[in-house]
Image (cartoon, rainbow, N blue to C red; front, side, top):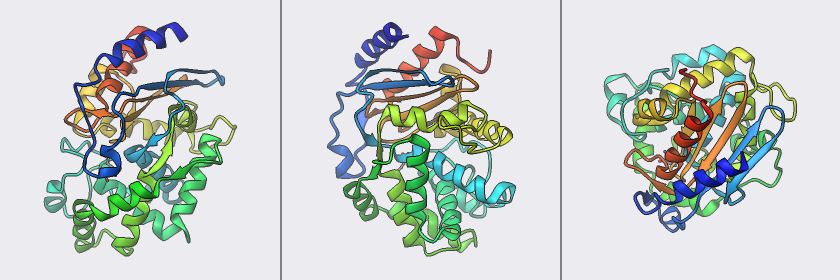
Length: 302
Ligand SMILES: NC(=O)CC[C@H](N)C(=O)O
């Protein structure tokens, strides 16, 4: 495995220069593009990694999986009245569908969907950002994880598009709490800093029928399969089809350049390289996951 990861790293690094680091906020635009890391965590507790697997980065939309998990734990099936389960086919920050679909976002992994989920968690917890941080720390088994205030403040400053989505949903009656407070928390989650090893471990429960690497039952086996189904159909925004075709695994990306992928009943994987393609997914990360999945025969589609 170590040799395979080294050779995948070497191939993937050749693609650096073809993408573009997220530049919608200055704090992310400054990230050194010349970075790559990968970590794989197996259900029997083996960790494999290569490159900068212990360098922290901004998890961004990968946080949407943590928020969804927390919401499922507390709301169960009732939550699906407020958010759909279909791929959007649109960019992650698109407003278009919200207007003609009565303020119900297509799925929990686009921004509008994650904002509704954050609104649910806001109603449920006295201190939602603290609840979420503790949940993520517990899942990763790392009590030192922090959110980057510089990133979250900058996101809040440039919040117009996310704020528009939230206010539009409020106009449709699909938003209960103060929009600005929910935005603050949503940005706090996006700005959590983690590395590939943290993320591979944190998502091990999705590869292990809902049981975390510390033995805690996070979701039921059924809920875990449902989340993986949603990740496979919507985890990479308007590139979910392409990801299914090239990689064939449930996955979730973020504009910090991280992508997590789940090999059900076997492994959780995290790859990171900051340069993005046009859909906002790590360009070298996608290529690395494709090579890995092909070499090991991981596709869930056969
Ligand atoms: N795709 C992403 O990672 C988007 C997250 C980013 N914080 C946003 O809300 O726009």
